[in-house]
Image (cartoon, rainbow, N blue to C red):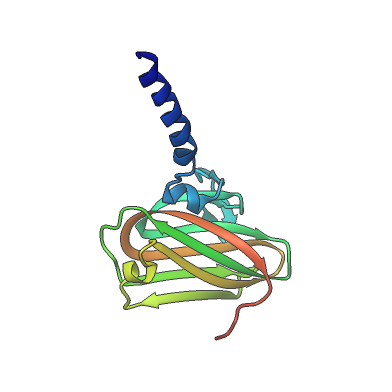
Length: 167
């Protein structure tokens, strides 16, 4: 009789372990197996140092309010950068978000500016802000992000070939 509780515990554990292994946090899902870039170097870009070069297999953990200056490298003549931010501890929604990406050569840029909008509402229930900007030229592109919202967040940047839909 004393072995029955043990057998039941083993059986229950064998049922629960696969279920628990499938439970991933919002951070794990958002980063999709990427490696955190601590961004401790200074990379020159557009006449000023950027915090680091962020690749598509990396993410950055940082916080608003304030801004980030990063480098993103592209391999095609035109690339759409998808900039995603997972808000972790929403403290104040803020009303402004600016994402600006410079073409190689730093003369032209594309930007998205959200102004006079509740950024927490814009992020939705999942807490993700997503912006797409178009960059031209192969090589290094300076990426600037600024907001007055207050929250720690994770940042990822993906490159997709093509041009932005103008709708």
